[in-house]
Length: 200
Length: 100
Image 1: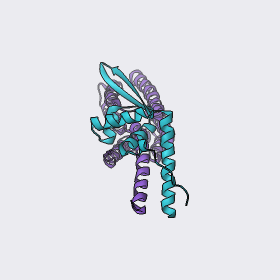
Image 2 (image 1 turned 180 degrees about the vertical axis):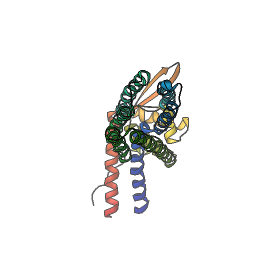
Image 3 (image 1 turned 90 degrees about the vertical axis):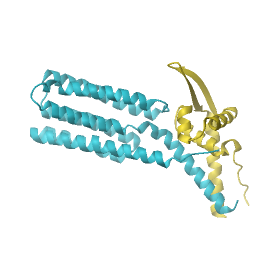
Image 4 (image 1 turned 45 degrees about the vertical axis):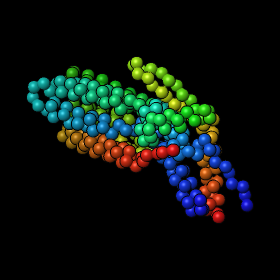
């Protein structure tokens, strides 16, 4: 083996070690579809709640349906996936946020004590903090940008008119749930393609 | 001329190196996940994991989950140390190749 060939082999081996170690960690991050699912759920609930009769049930019913779909998809996604400390930490952040948000929206939706300002401020604050925590753990700038957008919607909801709060919610949902979710899914898909076969 | 380090032959196999590297990034992993990540066959993967097990670099746990057999692999402390030593040796060789 000449020096150049050996050099290439060593470099490729080091690269492979790096890629494989990173792959183990990244496997806990393939959750882009949940962002898209919940983004669509927010849009469906918003549209449904704006239609006359049955609007009181729109948020509770949509949240329950999205929760069931997430549970079903998570069960399939988890199958065969490795366990990591980072994965458990991220799961804990999102599970805690999900449970809190579900109870708040379910209760406010049924009681009818919510107005647009409170509603957007609660969703923005909870999703902003969960995205911020997740992005800091993963060192993912794109997700941190989502946290900033959600927190900006909290400010708009607090100081703006009802219509401005509603628009801020729709924009944040579109950017941070739909667009970011699709982006995360594309990153995952690209990574899968990059992982070539390894033979002895 | 400085003496070049020897590479650990147990880890030097490409699939075994990939397996050890994958296991270094997780706490534990199923056989099926390792197979998917390395795109290897059941037979080859099983044989390479057995070599790593015999060397004491991975530990194996077999159990049943919902009546289905599940085999879990974990990297051991010896495996982690051997991988770290292997990487150090590779970097030393790389340095020697650049300086040559």
